[in-house]
Image 1 (cartoon, rainbow, N blue to C red):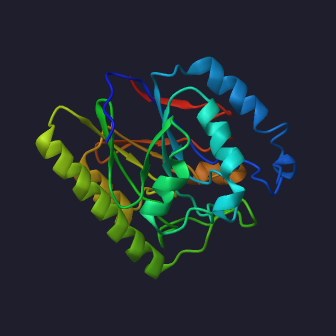
Image 2 (tube, helix red, strand yellow):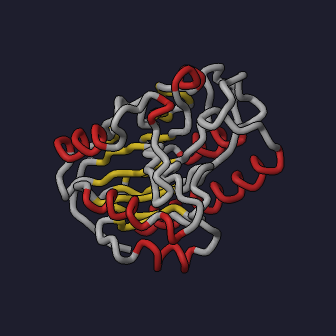
Length: 249
């Protein structure tokens, strides 16, 4: 666990970097991506800031395809904490292998994989999540939503609980830290129907919960604002205007 002094905390989700497969975002209207994001990121952040990369990081399907994208992230200013999205097939299930994969990239200081990460004054917990039964109808297709799955929701609830419990243990030892939750799928939708995830998150009382996943016409489906005492922020790249979102300072 690396410790830092005070820092500003940003987030960006759904960078959808091309990987060695060379998959572009042109057909989704993301012209020149990721160059505009790099320009905005480099202008906005300093090396002393922190940034949560909230899933759907790369189009890579295997670890040997993601190196260039990790190097791209490493070249951006700020200390990064990564989490998995539904398109991050390269991520795998072994924390040991992930640690080795990220080791060459010094600015990637942590990742959410069943535990929490302490970054400066923040303790960050979270998991990928999934579409819940409470989700409203949303666009389908490659950049659309995944179908609700009770099994997936239950599995992700266990993973989220494990990470939140780890963060609670850290807060017990360091009560001055600010709790943060970072997930990929929206834990709460615009219809504000409680979900398995929002219930767990609101019981944790984080200062902010950031998520991604939603794009284009689907952006309106996510809840943004304060609910149950938690501020929910959508930071998918297009929803964020292709620049990291400032969460806390």
